Image (cartoon, rainbow, N blue to C red):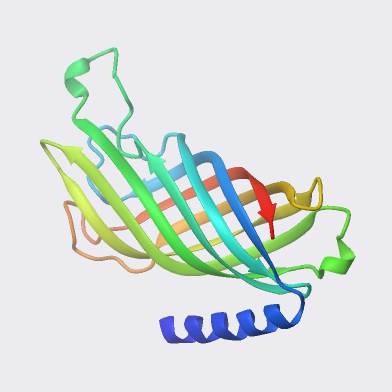
Length: 199
């Protein structure tokens, strides 16, 4: 599977360069929600909304294909902060989830959307890292994952624009790494917006 993905990325890169490719650098911010996991969630926090930061580095041609590296960092994924009703339930000191993915992008041709939003979809594979600093159930797990998402990119000037992104993240296969109920699974959705810098 990974070899096929790597071959697709090489082919897409080659076609993108031949079609006047451009680099897009996009820092993003948003929220993570609809989380679920079999990792022991002592504060029942994974299904809550959490702030998330991330970014994308994409190579997109004038045609329909592109590639990108995308990352999302969600601090506090396994903790709810201070629980005022009972401080003794604050079992997690800190936590975070980090995903780093390599994606293939499919979008509309640039000539169709030169002065409007350019929709896209992207999907790929990579690493998901879960970390929980807790005296009861500490976790530090590296898991193989995938993501599927889409959105739109629109430029406000020749070099800068906005990107809207909605994305589903999930582990690819369960493992027995870390304290969990059965195989380790981790899933969540992100909605984010970012400023695009084009070169």
